[in-house]
Length: 311
Image (cartoon, rainbow, N blue to C red; front, side, top):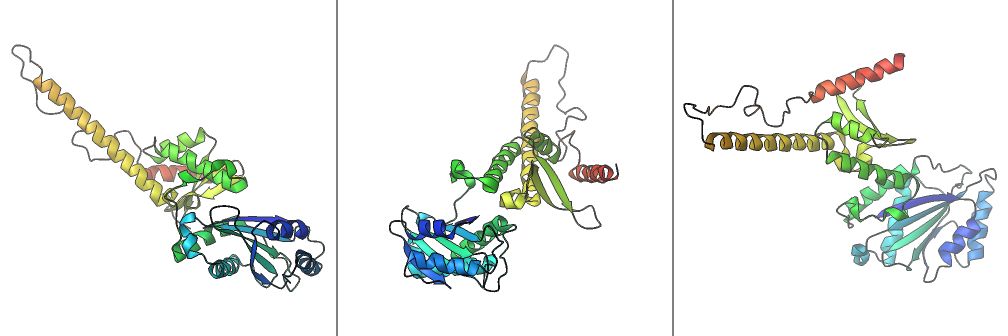
């Protein structure tokens, strides 16, 4: 289940688009008449007059499900999910219209609501896209709707605004993680693409709680981009890369020793079977020789941040 949130100025244009689409079916309504499009528009406009200075009073949300969920979504269930979504989004005490569309293969509906509520107050749209992502994820998990295995199946060309920026960050971070084995390397690779990472520390301590990524004016917590991009998730991936690199180096050195032993020795020379000091064969797996400890990196980064504030 995914949602797309929009706001606009014209109830007439929005209601006509939603209600007059071929095959459209009204599933639910609150505070408006549904016998005609003109009646719907008139009722929305009447309440809008409680706050005439509000330019964009039209709230418009599109909710979509996967084709895998068709059997779970009767008209009654879709109407109930729309009401549940509005409640979780904090869109309450106001007029709304819920209409199902059938012009595409996947189930989807449109919600038109009045941003001027019954008391003449404005329903805020601040951080609405973030709330939308969280609510859709919660409802998908709660009701057992189909969850795509990854972001690779998303049509990037249809994305706009914050969603487009989020997926661009996702792709950039995924690419960098495939090459990095430490936070230092990851930071350097992302900087090449104009992306900076920032750590969140527990108040009054040097313990890292989370990580966020910024590109230009857009910033997201790692976990908001992907669950695997939380601080813990990335740390695990980097540790796995270090272990794989160490294992690969170990195998390579063992092969070199084997070749040295099996190579014919010069007359009077006895080859040593022991690795030289500092060869790394007996060092703990996953600790690169020249890699700075993760803790030191975070401390240095936090100190640089504090120092820059005082300059």
